[in-house]
Amino acid sequence: MPNDFRFGVSLRTAESQSQISDAARRAEDLGFDVLHIPDHLGAPAPFPTLAAVAAATSTLRVGTFVLNAGFYKPALLARDAETLRDLSGGRFDLGLGAGYVREEFEAAELPFPSARNRIDYLRHTTEYLREHTPDIPILIAGNGDRLLTVAAEHANIVGLTGGEGVAAGDRDPLAERIDFLRNAAGDRFGHLELNIAITAMPAPGSEAPNLKMPRHYLPGLSDEQLLKHPGVLSGSVDVIAERLRGLRETYGVSYFIVQFNHIEAFGKVIAALR
Image 1 (cartoon, rainbow, N blue to C red):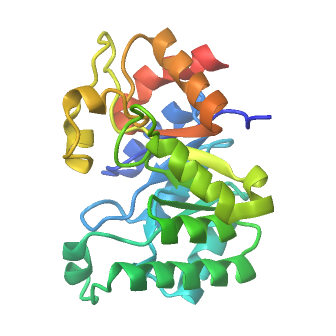
Image 2 (tube, rainbow, N blue to C red):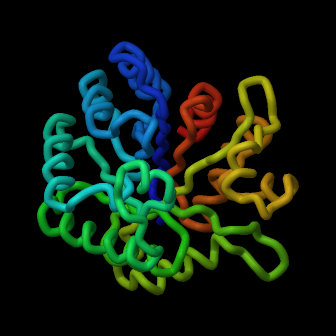
């Protein structure tokens, strides 16, 4: 049986306490399950911002999507995670990634390890958290074999990018990544929640998405291909709702995250699905 739908929204700005509180309450009112903060220099610091979100809400979960594991020592991260878990009344999901932006490591005066070493450190961090904070759900997001293996072995939630292409002919990149994850997870697979972050969807009153963000992350795809990508939604509210039902039924993906500028439009999709 597929998991129930869950819906998240990613907040990238936090200019004041009132702005954070208003955004969090709006997400809760629209039926979102989780509000996420990303982890980039120049963006709000995740932990204090999420503490403010938790204080302004009663049912909304808070999460990181995703922390750059290379920025943190495991014991210090565990301390922050435990504190946020307690301050939120147990409403915290910890999202982790291996980090990928060299300029941010350099700005933080940290060495930029190889991809292999970054994933090894993600594994080390995740294993530490699993031992010391076992009650905090862990989300790991990525696409490559080694990162998905770490997710298969240790995560509760796996953030899939949808692959680097779109289903065409005999190839289905998303299905291939999920098959890899299933094989790596073994008996754990049935307990995993599968997630996709939506990078583009129509604004209210439109059925065509702005493709600026997916073009940045998937520069090798044409606009026609981007419109078929699992992380891009187009069409009416009913068409989008049916697309998400199809992703859940076909692939088992049941957890979707949108950007905060899509909160109102996606709120209508949530209403159509519940």
